[in-house]
Image (cartoon, rainbow, N blue to C red; front, side, top):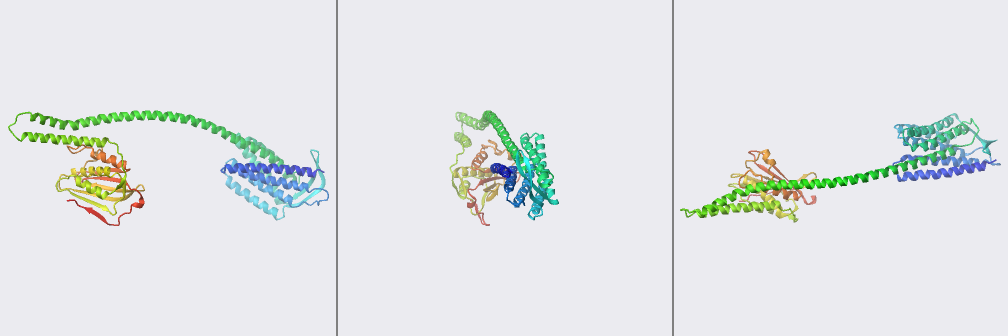
Length: 507
């Protein structure tokens, strides 16, 4: 009798299956989103338990050992119950079945029911070893005499069907073009055949044979391992191709970016030349009229006159025109100069008082500042912000010849989740049309003769350099409101006023 030799074969298969299970579980630990690797590893581990328990059964079948089989047979059957359920789950997950959840609810339900039947002791009607022996490739192996209850027989008939379902799913995947599924499909066919052998012999008792399912598991593991390696090989090849494609596209993108930069530089140069031409024309128009006046006045100075006060009047005219030209040149320099901020804490109250003192208004024009206390804490360039606010206040003053009111409101508001100082400068002048309001911050645009039209553009540049926004709102007959939004330093420094206000009415 060669029972021990056959038991050693089953033990060896169990060791191989344990190592294979470790490979798949280790592969899952690196790529946790591939649950099918974990399921196949666990199924293989339970098949290894089946092989080990079956080996122990045959190791115990020596002379002098009772012929009634013990719990090892139950362990082998219980291991296959769990293993088959996990293998079916693997097949459904590997094939991306749409019915995975519903099918596995039924499979795991049957698994629990069969395990309960096995544990209750109602699985076997007879589990003994007879005196008959089976010749297996020259080995004389004792023949097990097993008979199962009717409910247990259902499992031994369903188990090959479940493994066959896995073969069907793998074969369908292969037929659909997933070439790496071919080895796993062939291994699954071998395993299905061995499962049928064990079900007919050890389960139903309809034929004389020995457990062959561990050999089928080895074939399945070999095929699955080959499929996994082919899968990763294909992924590696695709990754290399994608890397090469991305490298080529990155080179093309770099060339496109260089071409775009060259085109952008050409466009910028073209825009700069166009702007220079436009500015030149505007400046020439702005300068020509004062120069013409100066030229006429200087010509009259050389002409004899009976009026002794005439030369003085002409000289005063020349001085006025030259002062206007000087102011225009200063505005042009301010407009062309880069905005370089010298950051410091800004005292808005002091800034407004200086600006109002420096700006001249029309007759009977009243100025009022209305601010929520405490004053917003700003960080910026005090000189540049003072210049911008002075330009806005000056525009408002010049819009009112007489009997007007200039109101400055200072508030703290949220804009896109950022705390901002909101400054509204409102005059009661004649206002502007919608078209004029849109062009208000265009260089050299002005609605009043004698002005350079650079005050608002300069103010807008300074405010934008501080991360803020300047908006103009106006309509005919209702005055104009310039709204300045400046981001505050930190929200912790920005407490809102509790109804208290500060007002100033300069004389």
